[in-house]
Image (cartoon, rainbow, N blue to C red):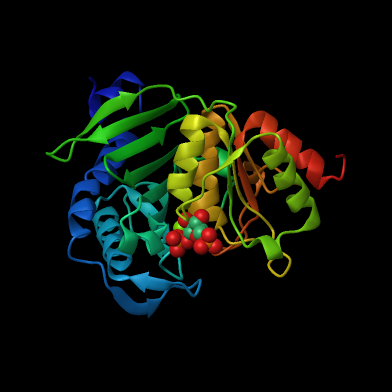
Amino acid sequence: MATLEEHLTDAGCDEKLKKLILLLSQQAKPIKNAFVDKQNYAGTKNMHGDDQIELDKWADELLIDVLRKSEMVKTIASEEQSDIIEVFTQDKGFGITLDPLDGSSLIAVNLTVGTIIGIYGDGNILQKGKNMACAMYILYGPLTTLVYTIKKGVHEFVMKDDGTFELLRENLIMPEGKLYSPGGLKKDHTEKHTKFLESLESSGHKLRYSGSFVADFHQILRYGGIFSYPALKDKESGKLRLLFEAKPIGFIAREAGGEISTGEKDILEITPKSIDQRVPLYVGSKSKIQKLEEYMRGYR
Ligand code: AHM
Ligand code: MG
């Protein structure tokens, strides 16, 4: 089975981008190993008001430190940091977005969490998601796996004991599927969203929701269906963050034949105004996103 490095080479990946993806993949082992010792709350909050877990902060600092030293990166934005980090580079350098540990409330209950990464070729992270050079995530579950796309298919790798990654599945395509993963409290859902969820329920869709977006999305990617974290009655933008969560996951979904939408428009077409922007989010099989948009327009 091909290693991640061989796979990137065979795909004709640009040498610098390959080096960067491999560098990021090498952080999976130290992060996974740190789960044992870094379970406590750090006693701090991030800019979104979430309590930071020790491991969250540690993984954030590790990734930022490694990227700063890489001499390949111009800008870094992390869900755990309030400002964009500018790094001096000789040439143009990449732009990176990081959700160091998505789903971190699940660390304490030993459910799957993950690192979500977006890579922009020209250092500008405040541009449309469709312009990304690469999106990837690492899942820390029973296996540690890595999913990436450089717009040449979506591929999944598994980490071996030495921390390197080996191909598990190539060219993932999201099936139509019958799962739904609904975020947000039912009492806060809008009428249109509720109607849409009821249509899924009455047509035999099964509810699967863990509270870790990246893990819930991975299940949708493999088995098909739809994940939602919608606009809520008192929070029009929902919960999930455009830069750190929506764009990279959407980039992977689209490449696997799926779609991502706010319910009204394509998330990969949104130019972010700020790094902490939130967005109502639906991601899943193409026909389900089409149906959802019809519900949102009031056509159903
Ligand atoms: P996090 O990045 O701080 O972990 O927050 C994002 C998480 C997502 O992974 C998940 O979809 C959502 O928050 C869960 O929220 P809720 O607890 O409202 O279901
Ligand atoms: Mg997150």
